[in-house]
Image 1 (cartoon, one colour):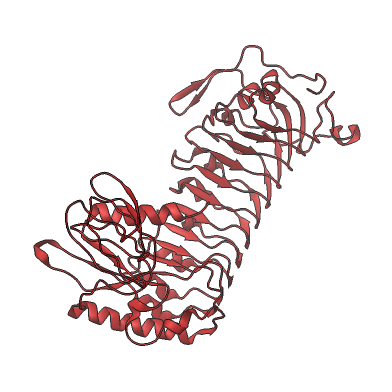
Image 2 (tube, rainbow, N blue to C red; image 1 turned 45 degrees about the vertical axis):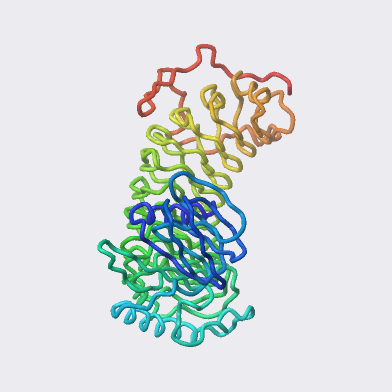
Length: 460
């Protein structure tokens, strides 16, 4: 899942909360009046502003976004701006001199960025050639902001964000970056940074998004990330982190947790069920043990969770679906065994359910195949012995349904009979007869079909 929506919502949230918020950066000028809307003009600026007359001049290259009374789209001359102001992406500030406290912050930012520059050993795209002089707001990839308060009081500019995605920089992070206490986002994906995350990052009191994905970071889980007080987006995927993940990870107020494609191992913490995240990706690691029982009782905020390609064993926890509105659930390429829990039939918002390449068994029941939002159901490479009539209807609903290499009599491309003579996980408690009573799914009641029974008819 991409994070552009988070960044957009973050700026929109700031703007709605305080219409006098500005972010300035870039090369070129943007001047405009209007009621708000989206404008992309010759200056290449982006403006977010209030309705009414007014103008703002900024130096920057970027995209313009306007918010006002109503939303409009304009292409040409200067984007959108208004009485309140706007933001531009690129470098520079809106022509105002820094205040005393702002000047101090910019001096500290200069110290931090120069220290970081000295720790970068390779810059093939020449990004850092602009990191010269004390005007840090003109540095490429550095975004400055100032805030105008009531009674006309205006703070000077501060560093509000750093975005060096795909810059291919090689080096390490430095302690001095913690000086940037007004920075709300730090995006460094697709570089060659290595080493550890400095413990001083806990002082980044305004940081909400930390993206370190697709780098060369290694060592244990960077626990300091859990002590960044306002962090909501944590992306560590495609690195070389190892070892277990801390229990406290799922007790934080993170909305997005991306840990996939590392070398994390050990058992998943039982605190998983406490997570407030809407997206959790744990794929392509070396996690072992069972999926925590608490997973079955996560809240409705969770929309996507991926466990695929680990070394998980045991049953899919009973309770899955009771209190969730999951849209994507992927447990494929593990060693899960037993029957599906009855409560999986409560996943009425599920769109993608991927169970392939496990050792699951039993009959795929009507209530799973009749899930109303289902777009793709994959159960291939398991030991299912049949599926109910409702599952046959999936082909007529244009739902992707892959059931190959199971143990279903009369169906094509199934396992050889000797493989089906012994069902894996014979001693597990999740090998049981599915319930025939209605299930209470949160606030919903799901009643089984009266004619539920397995079928072994020939292939459709």
